[in-house]
Length: 88
Ligand code: SF4
Image 1 (cartoon, rainbow, N blue to C red):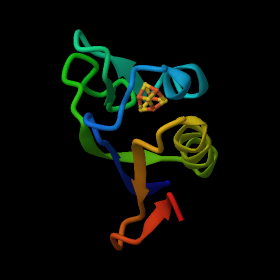
Image 2: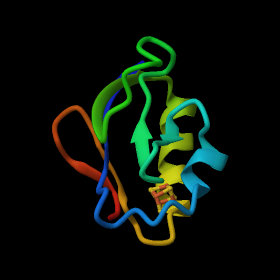
Image 3: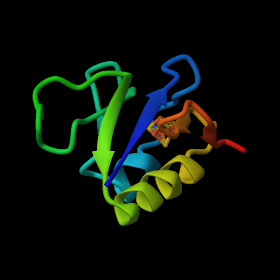
Image 4: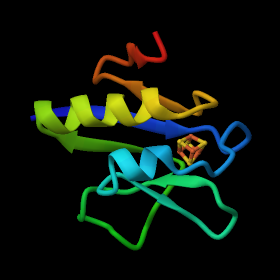
């Protein structure tokens, strides 16, 4: 398991929902049609535009795929040391 930080820039998000399609366990559209980051079931009712999540290697890869799928590159992924994994 590793800890990563996921951030959605709501100003860039256009509600295209690609991230939700790729990683429905991690993203959810809110009432403003902006993607928020879920806490992998730990706090399903408390989405946020930014949060730390504990993920397996597979989940991490999937979140990066979700970020890559975003047409406006509104999803940022950082590792535990704060290094930006995506966009590169
Ligand atoms: S893929 Fe990008 S634009 Fe679409 S909902 Fe997710 S963050 Fe927003």
